[in-house]
Each structure stands twice: as C-alpha cells, then as structure tokens.
Length: 222
Ligand code: MG
Ligand code: ZN
Image (cartoon, rainbow, N blue to C red; front, side, top):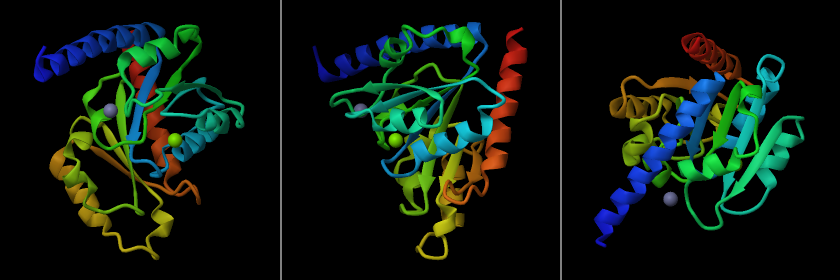
C-alpha cells in the first residue's frame, strides 16, 4: 500500500470514529473541547483554571492525552475533578479511537463539559478530528509571535485561540498584535482570548464563552 493511500485510510477511519463520538456527545448534551498547543504553552494550567471556575456550574470530565505519565490527570484530580489519563506510548497526537477508548467506562449523560487535552504538539493533532464541538488552540507569550503563520493548520480549524502567560509581556520580546494578526490571517472567525493562568487575568471572559457555548449546544439538542 502506498504511503498516501495508507494516510488516507487512517484519516477516513479516524473521521468515522469522530462522527460516532460526536453523535454520542450530542446525545448526552455535553460540550466537548479539544485543547491543542505546544508543550509548555499551559494547556493543563488552563484546564485547572477553567475547572476551578466552572466546576460549581457544570459537571466536568477531563481526558488527558500524553505520551507517557499520569502527571496531568493527577493535577486535575487534585482539584476534585474527574480525570482520565490516556497514555499514547509514542503517538504524538490523540485520535478519535483513543478518545472512544478512554470514555468506554464513562456514563456520558452525567457529564456536561468534556475537556480533552491533546498531546503537546503543533503539527499532527490538527489533522485528527476527535468529535469535539470546539477546538481550542493555546499559545503563550514565551513562544514566538509568529507561531500562527508558521503552523497555520493548527489555527485553521480552531474555534478559539487562547494566548496564555500575558503576565510575562513586560519581560519577553513578544508582539501580541503580530500574534493575533497572524492567527486572524489564518482564520478570521477565530475567537481570541488573552489570559494568564498565573494571575487569573482574562479567565472570566474565557469561562463565559464556554458556558454560553454549553447553553447553546444543550438547547440545540432539545
Ligand atoms: Mg499538559
Ligand atoms: Zn502525531
């Protein structure tokens, strides 16, 4: 089998499972997030902050995708939030089958907000639909402001972009306008958020966006 044919097969198998996942999520009335971004951008910290703010309003389940270790799921569990760790043992992205496998034992109708943290990687996670409702790409001021134009695929199919670590702006050489212009250039519909998981700045509008999205989704389903 040629490499291109093989790639196509992998993608179409993934798409079938993603569609199945999405149907299941819809039936349960939950809102599913796929959180992407490079290692160290603050994906887990964003989930911690989000869970802290929203856990009194929405029943949250977190699926943590990592190559190895249970560390990120442990961080979430420390907050009293349910978390499942999926270890890919080498794969550099999550696929829809891995998500289905992680959720096998879960009663989804008890979940209102499902947060899936993808493997930290700016390339191939973009090519794998997991069945999510919202795709969120996380960037940070500790990275280059040219990330969106260097990795456009990540931004192209995202619904929102969260720029983390804005508390570091006085200390780093990061042009926030350049970053946001690059993100918009790739995807003009992208919702942009500026946040700091350290100070909590900007977390409120972000959580409001999620709550509104959940309400919309839930009402649609009825
Ligand atoms: Mg993480
Ligand atoms: Zn990969």
